[in-house]
Image 1: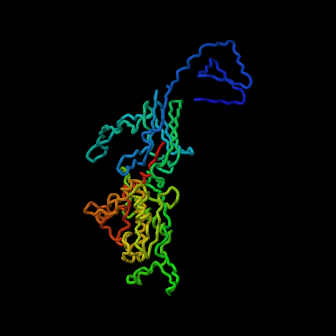
Image 2 (image 1 turned 45 degrees about the horizontal axis):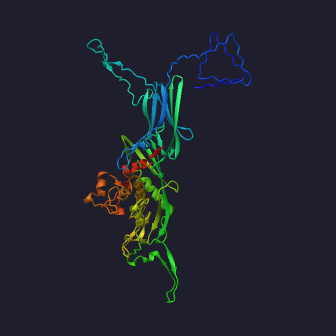
Image 3 (image 1 turned 30 degrees about the vertical axis):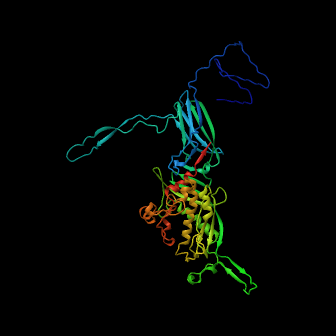
Length: 506
């Protein structure tokens, strides 16, 4: 320790005996003069200072680079590999025990995120307390019945639940990322610098060590989480990039008269609808019934509902993490910064039925081919449509997709959650996991039949009460007969959002 004393006037010290100062070195500076007065001056070898009642101790503190990533709660990866749930440090105490050890984490503004003090443990000895087996009571048959006493041990020796960091030795200090209010907020870590500090105390001797950590997301930058252990609630912010894909089937063009006597005329996309199938009760749509803003809201609402597992969902109320149960809420935000791959929202009518698709990032041959075939779009199909696939050229199979009968809005919200879910699944488990719909389809997108181990919509509904949002079902009903309220991301897929906030520590 050091001590600095500054005075404006004189310092006078008077002692009746001998005054001794012990130091490794003594420096005296004066702006004017130094005056010593004594009857005798004695020079000689320095004397040894008296022994301190506190023995000197040493501490070491460093980042444990054996664990340079962490995942909240240690959520397993897609292949069920164990993940480290802690910021891990190595701490060593040498030469002597101490009275207490303080540990804290601070942010870039030096605000404390977490702090904990470890004291020399107090041992509570086992003791006994009398236990009354019979209460004294008065009866009509005689005197008071006497009390009978028996001693029962009710306290066990105090047992430490973690190492005693005040004893000499080498230890690991682990922090799970939660602050002192039991809240984990991944935005405190993403691209930030933190400081970890330990302070060791023995008597009046205090020593501290500090290290700086650089932390960042190691997987994706489009998801943040906040976990409240006390409220048993997880809030997920999901940044998506939804763009306006325009409309198809609402275009008209004027064709000029020609030299052969054909008069000028206007031709519209709906003119190709075969006349025999047009029903007066099913009006041709000639202008948009849903704006881009409408589609954007339907898509975001779909993500919030179908990826959330909380009290607002019809059947999926929570997620299980260890022995705890949490509600999981999603807040999807459409933005251009720190976001997913772009996906178009397209309004489609008076045209071929449009398939929705999201191959996500083109990381390999399969995902590149997927981009060519299905593009990255979510289609709002409504009105008169030619029900053919992309390869069925010149085929005519027109029908009318009524908004209420086909549950068009609900279908679009569900489809949005499913297609954008492919980006989540690819980031979590890779292209094959995403393209095979968690093992319910082939890589070609062909559904696996129930007889070959595929999933049954009705069996899932009957046994689990919920329909997996990302599964393909051989027996899935037509859109107007689906129970969209029961579609939800599985617990594993929902928890993958926590895994995707995996932290890299350096």
